[in-house]
Image (cartoon, rainbow, N blue to C red; front, side):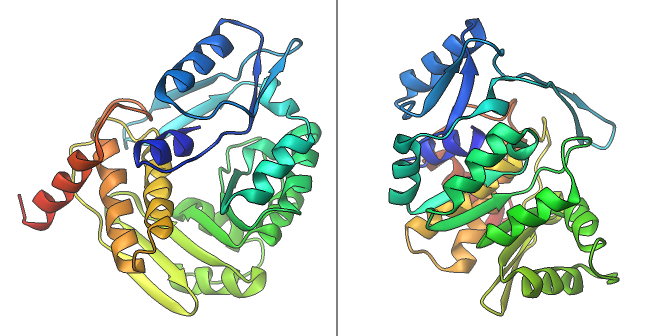
Length: 271
């Protein structure tokens, strides 16, 4: 949802596949996205399960700890021809691992992956909502993997005995034939693609909360890919958008693209 929001703010044309309850939260979510002009054609309605809820709490290290309620409507996303067609006609299909915690949504996801073009996996390893077999299956279907450092360590430790970030990343990419980006929070990000490595040190910002900053980063990266920007330019903009959002409240604050560009210019100028 957050990635969809930011891609829309970046003037792209995203659509969100999800399932919401027939309740006030579901109606409000649909209303918000419709008012923004974001495509809601692929919102499914569930009369038996409530709209998804997540309780987020910030710890002393500005890290967010999540309580992800289950079961909820998005655990029961059902396959149909309209979402299959939407995926097959899209340039990128962005998916997360949390959607595979329940067999219904998991089976739909794997079916959609069969007809997707470029497949981008944004891993979300939240205990107890994952297992090795499912994560391995999802990674094997992906073309591109986004992970943070903790997720990289957890995944790579299941296969390799490497200590350093670059060794872990390259071994994982070779095993699954991937391109990859590793986000490092305030320390920036490293992007590995086609045997090359690109790094951005990140931008320092007074953190308000980190909710959605990684999603903003991914949206920024994809938006620049859609613009055929260079890897360096894409990584710079993604890092800037992620830092910009970390300085705001909530994962989907209102902003204009020019604000992000101005923020990056100021940071590059040392202000």
